[in-house]
Length: 232
Image (cartoon, rainbow, N blue to C red; front, side, top):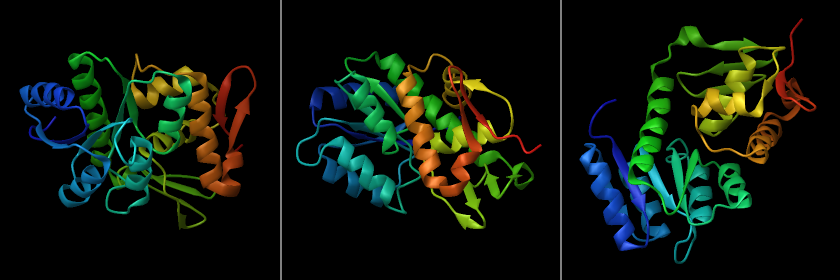
């Protein structure tokens, strides 16, 4: 992994910001900070960080609102977001993933875990950018370009989060194969990623909605998981 990747930390509690900064800088990351969501948005647009660590509970606009605005902005939508939250309830996790967060870490967290998760997200981002044009996958009326993180349906572009894109690409590469929710998560996020069945279902619902009529190619296999419809 390249050194000096830039991580923006949006956190209103100074002691937590300092803890996160210290541990990230030890790993040679460039770190910038923001005390509020509004300041974080401005910094993200101005500096285009490689990753954003975003606290959920912020004064003014909360983390959910900020994440939503980041993903709606053409200039920042492809920056991966990892949410920091004191709330470990499934509903909070699902809500964060549903609006485009790539990962989440529940407070209190181990600095080692935070650094490891940040590195994992950045590795996935780097791996995607190294894929070549030869890796374009065409199936039915879908065209999936991993290197450019682009997908078209009947020639029209569709905007997906990194996680949604990963799920679709994983399933579409193996049409007809059935995968459990945990197999899907392991393939997209890596092993030991804390996941609930509901959070995977949210990803699938989001995919089907964004794909429109092409969403029917993602089939539910009751009691097991999901598969991409076989072309045969």
